[in-house]
Amino acid sequence: MAKIFIDTNILVYTLDPRNSNKHFKARNFLKNAIIEHNPVISTQVLQEFYVAATAKLKADPVTVKAIVHNFQNLEIVNNDLELIEQAIDISTSAKLSFWDSLIIAAAEKAKCDVIFSEDLNSGRLYRGIRLINPFSQGF
Image 1 (cartoon, rainbow, N blue to C red):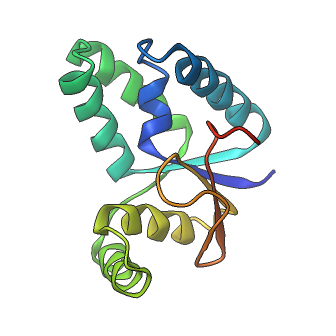
Image 2 (image 1 turned 90 degrees about the vertical axis):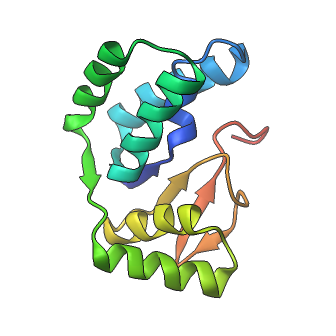
């Protein structure tokens, strides 16, 4: 099974019914990803998910904490000094935001084949890892 990195926005859409198309696609994507692949997230993704779910979506913090707890079954990359330095290198060389670069660095550290995100450029390779937008027409 391929290792895939899942970005925050996909997790947030699983809770956000305001865009029914993305909500449905995100829920199906996540279910299939868990069954068919080895999904990976990072501590950054967990933090961003909690903040987006509680601040933007106004979800109950206790409920969101329970959801976060359930991510314990996924591989989670911890953000440490080495990862932050790698993100800085990626950010400066690829001219990307630090936060997007930190996602790429975490996926690289976990030896992922693909990053699934609606951010960045779908189809592009970042340090040998393909970025795919699961909400795009061709996916």
